[in-house]
Length: 406
Image 1 (cartoon, rainbow, N blue to C red):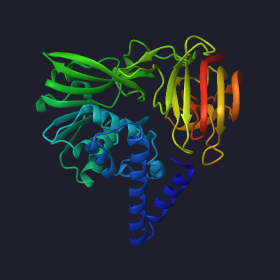
Image 2: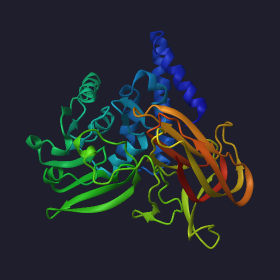
Image 3: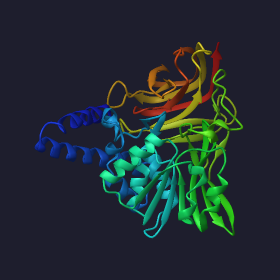
Image 4: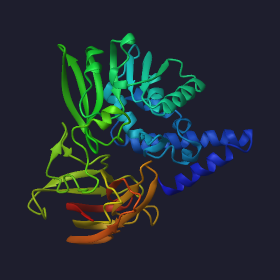
């Protein structure tokens, strides 16, 4: 979504407090923004189920975020909701909901209530939603929000979601909106025969979204797409066998050689938009490279990757990459240009700032870029983004490497 739309949403949130007429206009503008988000970030990205699309159009995401964040409610981005947790981007919610294949008579268990937004979307599609949140303050707040908005078929519980909700089992479907290292056995036991479970599984910053179907008592797995969920809270997160090393951050699959999923996409890269893996002799390193193409100014065209980095131990990041451009022009504003950008976050996931290589314009052959980016001392994690980022034309990346400067 464009910068102009973002400013329009901020104006809407301001006029909501002015008068009944202004509030009515504000509601209309929010509905318009919500429909635009669905068209541009959900339908255009490949979600096709008409019931899921209708639910996304009718669920007021702005009600599930803090007032200070409401101007971003209809942008396809995660937003902080407190306790170091976030509300998932709308595309992720729609994608997981579609993979779950919810039916009108289903009883669904959700693990990781968070803000309550995913449960609200599901409530319009199924008979009952049982949702569990391990953080007490988030669970209580979500319960109040869902009750105020009259999602009467959603039942909220504060507790350890990986133990499930045995007194209401078995469930037709289970959706897990946090990322464990492996599938919790209690959830497998509480899923009906023939039931479906959608769950992101993997390392803290390298996860894959899977669809599991219970067949003959066994869980049959299908990889859907790489994804990135924030670290969880509680014993399961602390007990991971493989932990990130924030003193030695690195790029995963920076050469795009490893592919995953039924429709192969680069492993380790998340929220991919208009990305194509090209295999050929012109790859500057290995066999593959990533190409982004876009002809519509302002349209999302990107991929990202998260990693841990401790600013107390890492002074700077040395970045190198190969990049090639063809007919690149800025998008709807000067901010919409291709970059390799790294955004840093503190321990509460508040943004500390962004450092970048680029922008690039015009046409040019493969060239090596190399620079150092300073790391804020309060940084504890970061997200690396590549792509046209709203610009038009074509840009290709390969051999992306990152090294910590102590």
